[in-house]
Length: 121
Image (tube, rainbow, N blue to C red; front, side, top):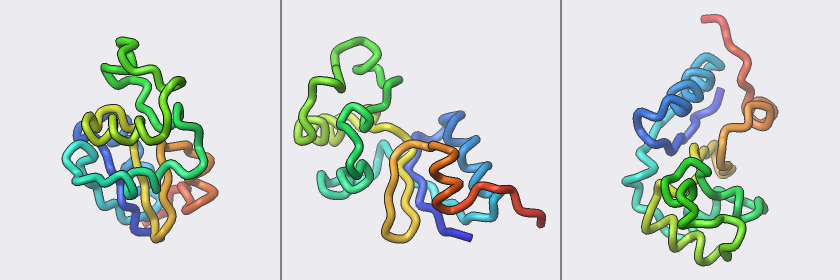
């Protein structure tokens, strides 16, 4: 079983369900507040891999929903600066297991990566 570093918005219903899935699969979940984490450009960038910049954004963030922020027209550098200023823009959760980092909770990807099958206790 894996030790999963899980950056979340505390109280987010989706995050709660995701942590339950991870715990039920026998993983140790260590949760951090994504909104108060002292992010650097380098650390934040490391979670996005080769995904397009538009996939780095939380589509439910107020700035995105209002149209003030259009993820389709933003450079990687500008996206990171914006996210450091307003962490609500960051797609959640950010997950780290060992040296590997991911953004979002794609059940199939996470199951293939660390396993999400419930374990009997």
